[in-house]
Image (cartoon, rainbow, N blue to C red):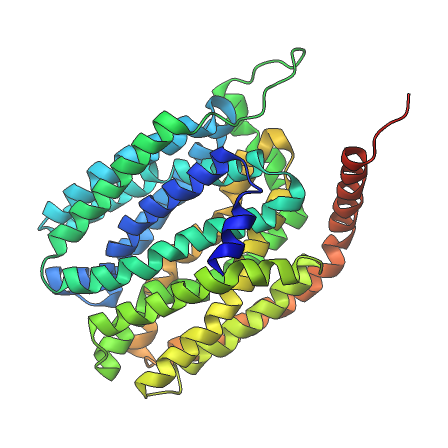
Length: 422
């Protein structure tokens, strides 16, 4: 398996390899802390999931605004500067969060970190699209997910142990990983923003921001991210509500939840690239509809099961859906964008994560309190079914776009492989 991955990895440019490694370091720190965020807040401040929901909503509003600004600035000033800014602010902010003992100050810091810390997200995704040809982008995003999930294998296992000793150490290690990643990006990764043609005028910052109007006029793209957002609303429960649900309603320990997330990540590390290659020849929207069925079954199961071994089976099923849906979604989003607007398109694409995060945990907390904890997972299954239908309908709407892209890709490959005769 690792030999195949190594051989596959040789096909990619060095800048992409470094970006992948830097992502691994950055996410390792995040996965030490983030899976235990809800547990930390509830125990540190003596509050419930509703307060956790408020906090995640505030943070997500910051992410939404910051992502838009960062995406536009990435198209204006370059990907590298935005990534560095986001990493440095995240690192410093993580230490500050660990020191705060007032919930309302914690809210304010979370909003600020959501705003500035998210500048680098769209830039990083745009950088992948800059570095790789179209035929490699889905696989490239898949490789990035492998690095992401390799850190998720190690992070929760270590985080579960460290959380039982000191949450402050988790915040320190998260900050350290951000600073190390910033150093790698600064010294090793070059700028990838496509150069403007000589005759093209330079855009002002305001004009770059106003350029979002063109993205927002792309109704097919907006419909795509709206349907995608439904799957994300379901998926985000894994890293927010699920830990508290399993602890409070089934007595499942923190370290057990760490093992659950690590199993999810191990599956992605070993099977993501294989799955990505197997599904690459099919229509993206049909594939996303198919993958969402696995999300529906996996998340829905948590409303019916009580045995710990079944928690792992449900996680395995939803992980298959995750491996199918999300790399396909990222490469599909990049396909909607022209080169000069990639940062802004990927920023708007990130809405599918930011908006559900605004009210996902809060909504789940209200459902758990007033309707019943199992209804979180019943509704997760229902929403996944709606999303499945949505992706299937999108296949007909976007078929022409992806058919044209395949034809252009074939032409590019022919031009590359067939020598011209003078």
